[in-house]
Image (cartoon, rainbow, N blue to C red; front, side, top):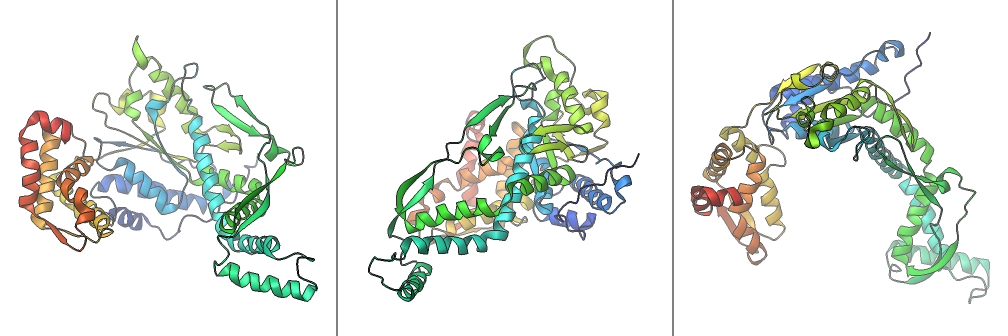
Length: 454
């Protein structure tokens, strides 16, 4: 029996992205964690390699799903998110603890496939909008001119005068001179019936719009509305985009993209590890794992855009695994995550690098925010060292929340400057080690106070 050929997938992954190049790109945004970066880089490169194979062999090669093990705030989610952004792949982050076993009230596991398909449809639609935007604007301009140009009998006697008046109006329209003028246009009411259907799996709600299925059945009514030319332009632009974009083609491309390059990040998978308990909400833990198994193994899920196969979606799971271990997952699910990678806890040196090295580091973010107020904010090297030291100390004394602690510390340090920022225009504010100690020393010394503030 001949294997069906793989559907053609739009070229969204740069073939020059070698594992080394992928790691270098991730290094621009994420500090440390070389093992995790290597694992995702290899998984992504294997996708590129697979697309170069003969269809019969490519169909047989399953993605090597990954489990990332490490405490919160060390970069697990950010690695997966940056990887998806790097490849422009459909990406969905969802907590495994949100799912419930079939038969319980809550979300069923198939909902994540429907969610990532919706994200892919939006992504493809935006790409198509960018392609046809110029054509749509030309059509919108002509429609606006038809509304603005005097009609025959309105003081215009000849066709030549009408053409001349239209061209004068075109220049004014392009220069924005007519944006505030009020016109009356016909707007189609969106009153097409929509029915809500509930699937058996977790009563997941799906809307079916009969207008989209049978556009000629419900033509819809129109009503006159008065709006400015600027508002009418936006309204017409949406209508022209809908006319020019083939929604069926968008859905097909989106489904192919999900099937061949989708990435689903399953966070908190450790929360559903472990065997059945006899009480409380843990009763469905193993049931959720068994429901996840066919999705990760490869099945077909029905969405309102069509059937989606999950065989080649890359699943990246993560968890702290403080209480449970990866071996507490059911054996079948363990086998579907062949790559295990442990992430390192962050040290004070890591915090210093996180504050300064990434392209959108926290220091650069706060400097840019205050720059919008005309305030020059400068951090000295000892200030960065002090912030990193306090973050490391608080993480050791209390719950270790990794790099997220830096956000709390920075907000406390810059509290006065951020509050008074609009009154400091034209001034320079230097944050040094002494200022950091002044803002934080009392809070860190008081254990009870630091629990609430830091």
